[in-house]
Length: 258
Ligand SMILES: Nc1ncnc2c1ncn2[C@@H]1O[C@H](COP(=O)(O)OP(=O)(O)OP(=O)(O)O)[C@@H](O)[C@H]1O
Ligand SMILES: [Mg+2]
Image (cartoon, rainbow, N blue to C red; front, side, top):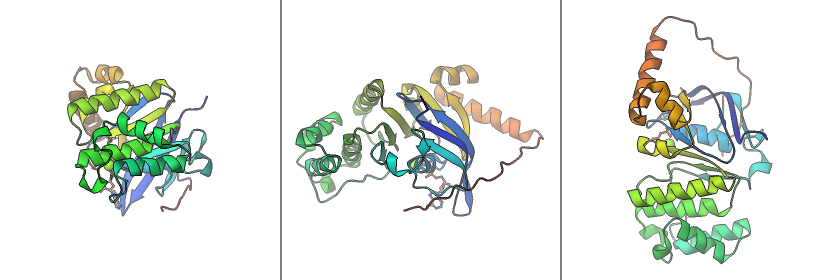
């Protein structure tokens, strides 16, 4: 079976800056892969390229065996954007029922999705009156509703308390155990240990792409935050030594951004 996501030599420029610098990675099916890196490192840009809404300079992105953004992927890929994407003037329940209806599900599925993200008590509340963390969970409930094969979740646990974060991660793993593939971004390193695999990204380049155990072993420390710092340092030392790093030849793969 093909991998859920196959990224090859992906180059993305935003504004005049090269934001992803020839990235290659493979995300296996039925697992939780963490996309970790500091603010501005390119996490959202990579997710946008995987969903197919990002113009890319060169390289390729295959999703469930199809080019990213292909019409056949519309029902198979769920995307939680970093900014909440629910309607302010509807209640949580109305939002969930609206999205459920779009996917062909009824009120029961909508109510279950609200419960799954711990929002049952706020179901009747207008989204406009929710806290930031609650709003983000309302968006997550709607993203989960379509039961996609691949879930791209951009910082789904930001602003959540530790108990809720743990519950959400349990939910992600339950979905993966049932066959869903999840790519979850975070810039909080303590979440890295919860992933089956990690992609560590910095300044548009991948500096580690492995299981948490292997990342720890490669860096020689059990602390993932420390491991990340050591890998960055090693990389900077390697780049500082002379050597020609040839650029890849461009393969046109341009898309329109909506
Ligand atoms: N619309 C845009 N136009 C120009 N540059 C952009 C645009 N969006 C993002 N960038 C730049 O692209 C780079 C990567 O941004 P991206 O949003 O992918 O980072 P990120 O890792 O998701 O950060 P964060 O953790 O803050 O969400 C940053 O330097 C950012 O300033
Ligand atoms: Mg981002």
